[in-house]
Each structure stands twice: as structure tokens, then as C-alpha cells.
Image (cartoon, rainbow, N blue to C red):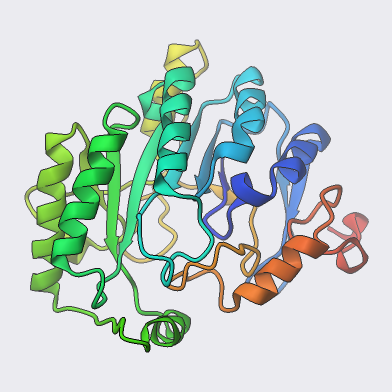
Length: 305
């Protein structure tokens, strides 16, 4: 089983202590985001084939990465670095900080263990084509050698995304969506820059935006995990393709996270409607509890799961 940690929240940035406690316990409980019973996810060494971590700030998680590797598990750190202005990315670390951490992870665990995400592309009056060209070129140059793939996507205008973007950009930063042909043109431009700096450019779950220079992304990738495992004598990772949404090419995984628990404040985020509520959940989170982001008094009795 591949464990995703997590495309619903930023476990490496905010919940590393909880993650290590759950590794020690050998399981975690994950709330069902659509209602119904929670899920018990086995985390004992025999049950886990590999991990995929998703983050804007991997620095606090470095001890956990060492612990995961010591258990003999391959892992991939999917790290988003966009370099956007603060009206879009309110509380994330500076790109320079995160770039340095990714170079360290690459040096310790290999380039296959890191994937850079320039994801999503957001177009505003302040982040137009000229901005993305210069910004992406700068980041690609700084990250050269720290990863071998960059994942791209165009912002998906979910209802909460539209609402939050409209609120964040009303003071002269107006945002807009584009026709698919225009999106492909911008992504193709970024792909050409990526190739010059040694990155394989891919597109996440948007097959209608693929171009000759862009391949479909597989963010949960048993093949990549198997290549990593082979380097230290672990068995290959086997999993069927089982995307999380239409157009997704990921392999099957189990996710540990919970929505509305990440306080980074990225206004285009699909996983958080209100940053203040997410910040409150971080403050009230019990790192010794079986659930992520849920106060101990509200947690379902483990005997009932």
C-alpha cells in the first residue's frame, strides 16, 4: 500500500510530530470527507510499500524523512514552490528557504525523492505571462539538480477558489481564467524552460492541456517509488492506476489527511475554504490522537472503527 500524506493538508509543515507518533503506533484514523465511518490506515512496516508527502515547507519534516528511510520505505516529497506575491501565498516560506531544503533532501536521498510543483498557474494582473516566464525561469535555475520533474497545472476554479481569489484580488490584482488554447501556450512556454534546466515537465490531471512538450503527471507513482527502493535494496512497489479525479493518472493510495487543516493561506487552495478555521484546527490538534487535526475530545473512539 502507498500512503499519501497528504493531498488534503500539509503534514510535513504542521503535523510531523503527529505523523511520527502514528508510525510508532502502527496506524492512523482518517475521517471520511464525504461523511460516513472513518478509515483505519495501517502504518506498520509490513503494510506500507512507500510514502508520498505533499508540502509547501518540508524543513520541519526532515527528521521524519530519516525515520521513514530507516524503516526501509521509499518516499517522494512533492513540494510546491511558486514564488507568488503575498496576496496569493500568504504564509508560505520564501522560495529561497525551500529551494535550499530540497537540495538537502536530494543530496541525502537522491533526485527521484523530490518533485517540484509549480502548481497551480494563477493569472492575475500581477502574475501575467511576463511574470510567469521570469519567475519560473528563476526558480528552475535555482532548483536545477535538486529534482528531475516539475508538475504544472492551471488553477481549477472551484466555487471556494473563485470566492477566495475574488476577495484577494479585488484591490487591483484582478484574476481571470483563460481559454484552453491560451493555457496550453503558457504551459508550453514553462515546459521549454523546464527542459533547459533538466526537468521533465508534466501536467497534473488536466489532459486537455497537454502539448507535445508535456506528459501526464503521475504524482503517486509506483514506478518512481520502485526506482528509489531499488537503490537501497527494498522490494519494488506495485499498485494499480486509480486516479483521485477525472484525468488523474495516480496509482492507488490511502490518504492520512483532513481538509480544512492547513493554515498556509494560499487563496487558490481547493482544500481550505477559511484559513482562520484551519489555523484554529492546528492550534487545537492533539498530536497524540489517532486523527489528524481533530481535538482529542471530538475524536471517534478507536474501538468503534
